Image 1 (cartoon, helix red, strand yellow):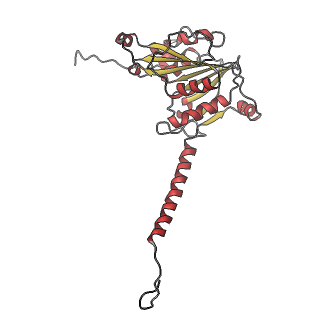
Image 2 (tube, one colour):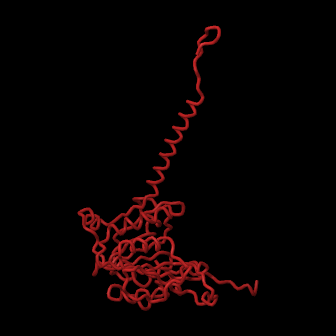
Image 3 (cartoon, helix red, strand yellow):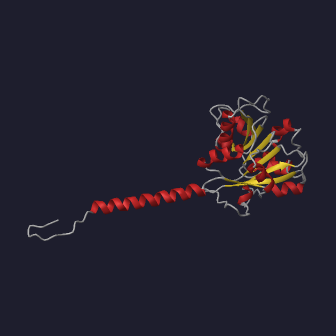
Length: 280
């Protein structure tokens, strides 16, 4: 640019520098977003035997898939089903989010928050216990990846789910006094008879059970969800027993321990001292 006196000055454009800064910031934001997406990806880790089978293009031959979501549902399976030596741990899922910090490729307590077991004498029976939090943006991932490993023909899915009785909506307040209790929802492909009454409107199923139910409805997989409404937040033996009827119709595939030992119950049930407020 030339001045009135013929002096040549360098042109400085603030707009150009701002555009470059915005471009750099956008690229940096995109990189951060990609890293977060990669970190939040749900990863399945199978045993060498299962991994080899899946890599060969084979899917797990599964007739019954039992999914337990929540501490009482998962510990019910631990106390009444998995206490025998008839089960092998064949895989786990690692999930990272704002409430679950499980890291990929390490052995930790978080890793055991989503574990798959297969029955030794009947490998077509698969169990999964989920006690970790799975974020909303990870539900579809988890469901797609897990069910992509299973053959869908003649597959039956049973979901056991924990829920607080405070979330149960009803005009009959006496229902709260009968907690814990079961309610059910099932897909159109489910031809059996649920062991309890259906979940009444306007109550809904949310989280992983809802994602699984929706996936199975779309793919016409016979599925039933049993949601247990309890007034106890932690692991509780009474709440666990409420799930018993849900597996009675699977007696050919699942054998329940009718009377688990006290040692087993102590291992999986959290006990607290109840203090009276009558005396100080």
